[in-house]
Image (cartoon, helix red, strand yellow):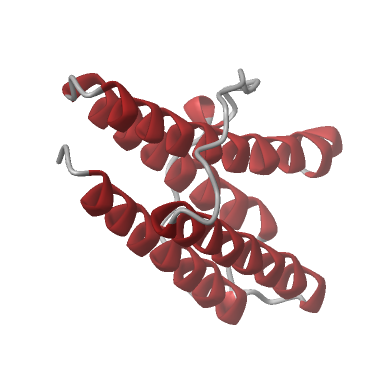
Amino acid sequence: MDNINDILEFAINREQEAADFYADLAERARFESLKEVLKQFEQEELGHKKKLQEISTGAQGVPSLTQIEDLKIADYTVPVQLQDNMSYQDILIVAMKREKAAYRLYNDLADRTTDAEVKKIFLVLAQEEAKHKLRFETEYDSEIMSEN
């Protein structure tokens, strides 16, 4: 996958899948406050999709890379299966692990290309996923770990 347009189309589709995923989780959530948080995540993913669409049309350039903190909470949580009426903790675990997998995918794709521009796009996409994961890990740290 070394064609920039193919990469962006792939990423745009992934962002739509993520938005759909969070919309589905919102439907499964028991508490209205959690539903609202998940709907915000859905809107964020749609915002990322729009940004990628703007990059693909040339309306926006590729952002620069920055280092994103990794709390590594996702590394130490037990995987959770999707089900109805999930707890807030379980939803955060599912979301963290999903974002971690997306981050690894984009980094792996960056490692496999020799085209510098394509590599940068993959690394920027990985960075966006790292930001998502950090947000969930921060929420988990403040809401779940602080209770224990």
